[in-house]
Image (tube, rainbow, N blue to C red):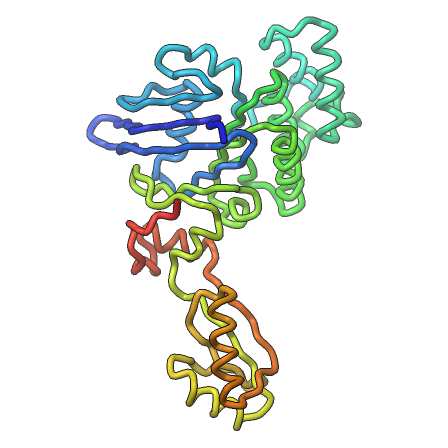
Length: 319
């Protein structure tokens, strides 16, 4: 697929502090790409460089087909940026904020009216369009901020922690809006500290740690880098449980007074499940129920950024 964003060898330092130490990224058109990482990892710096707000020290950057070094204006015309805090004017109404942005984007009066009306409707802000922003809830302010970002019909949108501080309902609304944008062919580059958000939205994720990319891949690919996956097998009787333990030497009993179960380490893929069940069946052991447990992005995050699960090899980057 065509790359909407291409980054090679990107470097940035502030004084003696190395913020980005030679990172490579490729974001396919019409996809959601998430940057994960702890505070200070360099996520916002990446976004600021890609959106032309900060100059890199080294590296090649192309966004929407434009080279950052030679055609930064082309990038600016092709992108939208929503920062960590809603960039709206509290003294204006929602409609006035959108009209102001339309003016800055040099839309003519007729096109501006049509675009503003469309965005107010799309983001469910029509009823509050003539209310001052000071009366808006946090979720409404973030929706308006995103609507303002879309005034110029950008093909690449950078969302820097767009749901920080939102309640669960408002966060779900933002996720739905992001999915709608992608369905329209817009490319989203997202930074977030909410691992569930990245898991739900992203086609691919890059984990950034200390200015370097620790791993890149689809959410499921990253989860397979982390040990800890297992099958949980339930048995009808203690005798069946004991027989299964004799057959599955690496299985561990589950501490649960209401359940007879074993945890069997493994990937949980079809081949592994079939192998375990065949071994039990050949020994005449009945399995009452089965569950597949895989590591989640929390495990990936901690493992790749020096947390408690840091025993995995960082060179195991998913491609």
